[in-house]
Image 1 (tube, helix red, strand yellow):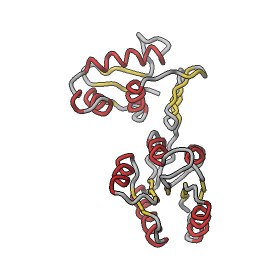
Image 2 (image 1 turned 120 degrees about the vertical axis):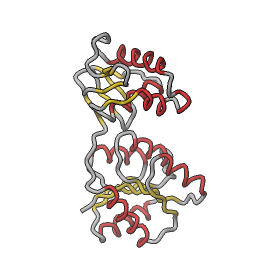
Image 3 (image 1 turned 60 degrees about the horizontal axis):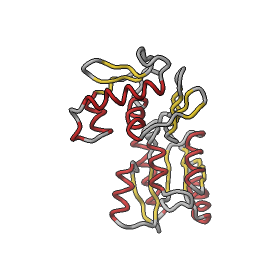
Length: 225
């Protein structure tokens, strides 16, 4: 039985989806706002997310960004926003599909089946990566060391997130520069040296002999949990 996280602030829609999806063999977790949704996704195994964009505490795009910080779970947007710009924004943010309200249940069920087929046996991913020296909360974009928060600049976070999401794998200099700074900076390797030194000072016990943020000379960097 697949588990669907339904996120919508309209009680009637939330209740109707709970009843109908359960009747079609889905287990349903209901969330009336973005905060509840992100917490549920972190603590329970979810196979698909059905997400409204107009939430009371945050925009649905922020929920997508929060999820995509650590998981590839399929996300189907279910929204009253009909504009092509809204659809493009949601898909670019990381949504897999977009259904406009009002909607037909048969269409939504078909989209759910397609999403679960594409994802296959969805592996449970963890929003938190823990090392002996620091902890990275990918869902909430936070870093702590010895229980205390570590302040990260957006650029530092971008580098760390990319490395942590690829544990044990070599991430090339070009990939880091392109994804964090943009294609125009693909050859500016000196940027990386500066920022990696800053990250090590903040996170490693001995920045000169790092245990987790490793350099592969001439190639790139590697995160060792």
